[in-house]
Amino acid sequence: MIPVRGTGRTYEIRSGEDWVSLCREHPLEVTASRRHDWFRCTGHDGRWVIPDWEKVAERWDAVHLTTLAYLTSANCPLHVDADTSTVIAGWNPDTTIWLTEAAREWEDPRQHWQRSTNQETWTRTIS
Image (cartoon, rainbow, N blue to C red; front, side):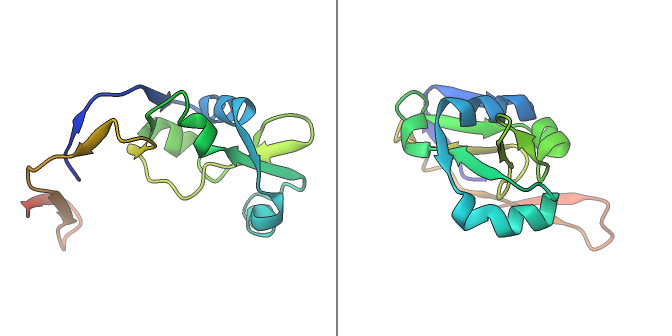
């Protein structure tokens, strides 16, 4: 984890519908670049969009994907309208993407987490 300092307006994605709302409000058509992979993953044939991050940054400083939203909605076709869908792809659970410089990396050390060889515990190291 990278420690940051600052405040900003954060859009919380708590469900697939929150992601769909973001795509409806700020759609960026990506059918040409994503259709092949997303069709193979989801079986859905049609137009695809993701949020237009430049437009999102005009209103929000960051977007946070909750673990629940990730576990219930990632890699599933989410319908934006009758002809268009989206996918939460390329994210990790409980991730925040900063779109503006409202927060900056703090001078505190970064945290790294590693799973034990027995797969039962996690250990934190600081660098």
